[in-house]
Length: 195
Length: 193
Image 1 (cartoon, each protein chain N blue to C red):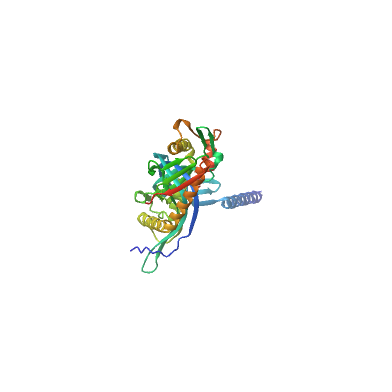
Image 2 (image 1 turned 90 degrees about the vertical axis):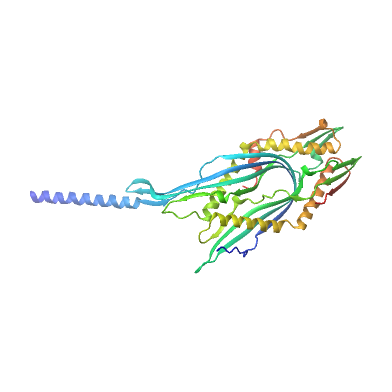
């Protein structure tokens, strides 16, 4: 009798042990632990700081991508930071600079005298669009500001060329001619003031 | 020592002839903030866990200034946009559009805090947060009332021009489409997304 009870106890113990092992195996298989951090920015307000009425007429837009790098020489290896900046240099005229009598009409003829072609906005880099291309080593915000200034200089150097200013002037002339014709003038003369 | 070298060529210049009258300029300031705590996440023995790791916090605040400009595209302006009725002239203008002309990260004012167990913010992470901030500003453009102001200011530039051309101010009408859905119009016309 005692022997039978012992066997039953052993069997019960074995069943419980198997169940425990199965449960443990299942739990371990379901275990999934990761170390993670959120990449999203917080929701913060956008503050409208100023609104201004302007009258800038753009005749040429030069979209620019500039790959700029900086290198820090080290004893064993060099550190690099390479970024791609985006900007659009806009050439045209400021309508607030037109002088009295800039439009002279006579019957179906009109003479248009426009102010000189200028760089419409000195802030033309969209820095928040910048792409990080490569980074090794640790770089400060000051280094990034230096890169931005380098990209700015390069964009100006590449875009503010006499041929681009001339192209903007020619397009401005064509655009004003077309507009004046649309307004009903048969003979249109367009000239630019020299800067 | 930082040796700034110009070893890479510039990538692309895209030159485009245009005829855009920019009428309104908006300056927007935003402080992009991001904070992340390194967390142990997942399930252990069928129980969900989400525990912050000690000294695993990072925070950053990035001040940013953006310039948005509204413009009227005169590229396709023809006699169909003009209606002359004796001494009265009506100009029908295309819908205003909005473009982000510049954005500037105030690098000197960036504040950051990095916990002991964390690495510093990488350049890739920083540019990612800045791009998200930029998108957030573009998404808020419909609430800024840019289109209405762009229309008013377009009239302020064009009316003096037509007066100069010999029309009397009371005989000039600058018109826009009346039935436009402002929100849809801005979204469909917004550039630089």
